[in-house]
Image 1 (cartoon, rainbow, N blue to C red):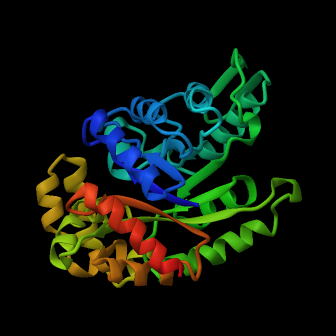
Image 2 (image 1 turned 30 degrees about the vertical axis):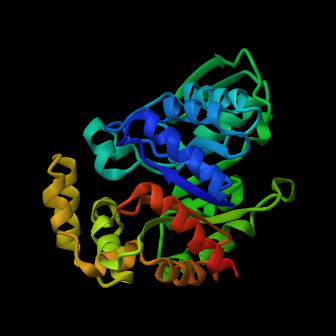
Length: 328
């Protein structure tokens, strides 16, 4: 898979135009990020689906808290139906800084994610579902089946060891939140542990680097544009991840607190060069190609994530060029 993430901080029309451009540039999968404080990802996905022909489309990454998992399964199935079988389901525990605002901070974890997508697969297969776990459902079912049925691809978003292993055992892929070769090397170790318990009938597994990327002809401009997503990543990073890159825990905590309080500019200003190096592929096309090549020593595929670059239209093309060079 060679994918791209678009963030609906821009109007749906703008996201649609970028989606059309991404398909033309050679991306095979497109995820629209899912945060309550941005525009609705499914509205964007349907618009993009109507304007494209082949690119796979799905939320990246939805969580099982903001929307009931049965309803979420139906939303993804509708995307699959509307696009003629091009749906993909990105699901994870939710961004810590934003789910905290909705009262779900204590609910994040592996079990809600696993229960949600396992239920979705049963619904897509035409089954009726009773469930009493992290959510409840009684004789729930869909009145239609998506073209992909239960084979609609499921990618789990996460970076913790248990989430990585669970994805490798039960899902089709892992959207690992990482942009650095050291993080993907660690992720590969976790995935291999999970794959040891993977049933043969599940087929192959895709470890995707869900990487923050900022690319431009001007290296300094690219690095400056990386501040917002790096702030979100740093604010939600687990202590072992911070330690892997020798980053200060107190500063990371302060960044997360500022984001939760809506003080985004203050959070972005706290981002250090070392944080950018750890959590974003950034620089010129050659710089980013080198970083992509290092990551693909461990990952099976790459999803180019926010911010893309200071100029979105140019960045869609430049990131595709960097990927092509990295794969040579």
